[in-house]
Image (cartoon, rainbow, N blue to C red; front, side, top):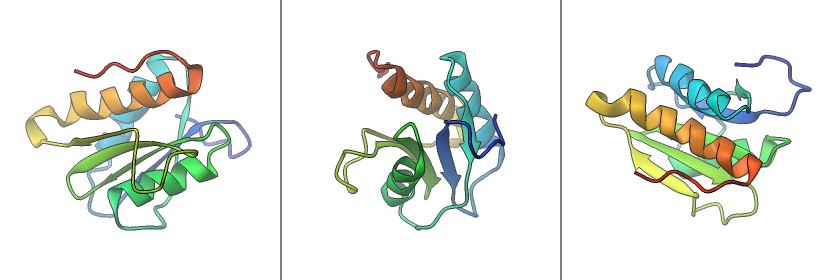
Length: 117
C-alpha cells in the first residue's frame, strides 16, 4: 500500500458502502506481483465506471473498482463499459476474490498472463 501520489501505482476505488478490508486484500494481491496500490475516492457509482476512472487516472493505466457486490479490473485503453475482469464479491470468498483482482491488475501492468480461476 502506497500513499505517495507521485509514485506509479494501481489505483483502487471502493464505493462508500464497501468494507474497507477489501482494499487490503486487493493490495496484498498486487504487491505479491511487485506492484503497489493506492486508494482513491470513487468518482462514479457503477463498478466498471469506478474501475475505468481509476485506470484513466493511474500512471500505470490499470485501476480497480469495488461496488455493488462486484470487483472490476480495468485498463485505460478498454471501452469504459468493458472491464478486463469483473467478478462477484461473495462474502464467503471476498478475501480470495479481492486478492485475485489485485494480482490480475498487477499482471496487466507487468504483461504476464492473468490467472482466471
